[in-house]
Image (cartoon, rainbow, N blue to C red; front, side, top):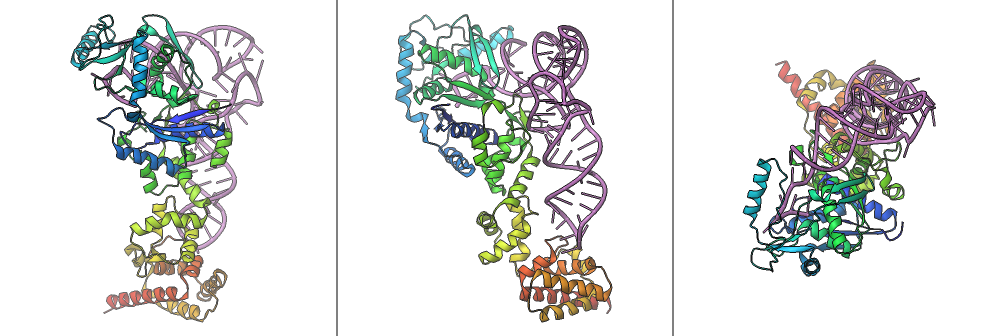
Length: 472
RNA sequence: GGUCCCAUCGUCUAGCGGUUUAGGAUACCGGCCUCUCACGCCGGAGACACGGGUUCGAAUCCCGUUGGGACUACCA
């Protein structure tokens, strides 16, 4: 396809959430797949609800996910003269008119119509009054009274609407700002958007927009309405469904690759394939493979993908990403090599960076804290001679490699005629404070001789104290 | 209420009239591996909403029912 131009056009009235991010992703992928252009446009015509900080959040979210834009961000609030120009064109053509009905009045009529079981539609009172501009007046688009408007949707097929169902919608508010349905049309038209990919909560707006294109003598772009993402209760995703903002996932220790991979598979598929690199997505993404039905956001699968990408990531890269999490926990940062070796042991175990930071404690903290249950169960006075023996053997060991260490422990277990686990668990508790950890020999190897022996001695002391208390 | 959309395992999905005892992934359960926990590997359970057609043949096409969702603003 040639000269594809797509856009992502969020309104800065909140953070970028899962649904918006996926819409952006589809637009971005489609543009990149077709060697086209991707434009970022901020739809801030709602002065009351828009806030500049949200624009920043949206930009930060897109950057985090690795979506770059070729133009923009454009702000609708800075394009007012353009909208005015198009308003006057419509006014001149007789396709729009001024209206001085007050919002209260319109609302009242709407309610009356509802109560009478009729369509709650603007009654067209000002259609023929030939009003000019003035205080408190809006501009309405003159919708046709009959005929049908066909929406040719790439995903849903063709959808037909009766024009008689359509309202004379307000296209310019009394404060002079354009409304959404009008501003999108003017923007998409003037920015040369060829494909509008957006949530299917917009399908009902599409016939109105097509009518405006036609009134302007322009050809509408190709529409692709993507099914929505719903919460576990099958309703529109909102705050009550827990974390839905993209940045919240970044802060919870998710990798952008995992988020992108998860998002793209929500509604789009490529046979049985689950894992996609960004390059692969650009190569394989097409609108044809987008499904028709809404999907439910499943945090569990996202988590799985995240753990997958943590396992697959380069330790060096993970170290960079992990640093802020360690700082947050106020852990002392060790040298880079030590950190990366520790990370490697945690990669198959941590599902998020937050988890990884939590698991990192015994590597970084000098004085580890024993889990009380673990200490009670494994650091028993009966282990004193075993620990004494181990300390001696480890002191004598000149090469602290996994292989040599394993030999030491296996020998000891053979000499004492006990299973390796009987020795390994108490040592694990002594070194990590917990009963679950990476492999014992890798830990010792990384911790090094000094730290290991210090911790074993500390455990020894702990057990001796316990013995005294037990037998006074 | 009206308009519009949607309907395969709990969830994400493959399937585009016969190759299907409906495939994969996740979650769940069991086993193996094993110094613990994970990872990994092997196995199990689990779905075509329902009813009519069309057809030699339907998860796939048509109609209806039911269910779900979106929209119905001087929000986007």
